[in-house]
Length: 276
Image (cartoon, rainbow, N blue to C red):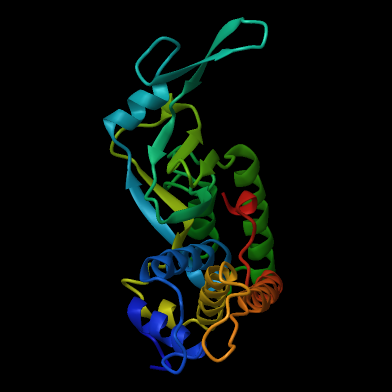
């Protein structure tokens, strides 16, 4: 099937590209399964079509607040011991001010402001409300350019007085550390997390038909095929035929190098240290 919509259809497609069923592809099913997982992982972590920008809503719990407010020696403190080359043992403590993040999230951009003390944009006593109430009681009462400049000025004030929350995230931990004053955070409040989520091919079957993924997996299987045949280098088959696994391996490696290079130029998502 030229447009695979499942894992097995993609595997069959790649085998046909390598010559099956005319040729026997000497790669075990277990090896192919590993290669599919590797190809999907690279596709989700580096290809912009493998992820989608989304927003997660998270309700803060009492446990989250307890971890965030934990003081030295209190509940939620992680203690690590390290011994130097001189034999001196030191203890280090880190506040466990984190929330658990699903493992399909590969990067976090930011969290939106969740405090309610923003006098610039919130409630009826804010500058924004008073501007609407006093100056926009009928259309064309003020010049739109002046209004736009005022909004920009208010945004600058908001940026200076209400800074964004500092966060730390590494997808291998599945923890989002929020470096704020947790005394200002209460259970029941919500966080809106701007993040990147990996597309699950089990849900979005179009992933299996991605042009890069098809070429990349085909090259991976081809390289594994050559690797399997290298051990038979020099062995003569009936009729004088000889396996040339080294040539298959080298051709596949060149194809993989070209695919990765082109993806890094055309299709790669921003580095994780820029989005998480």
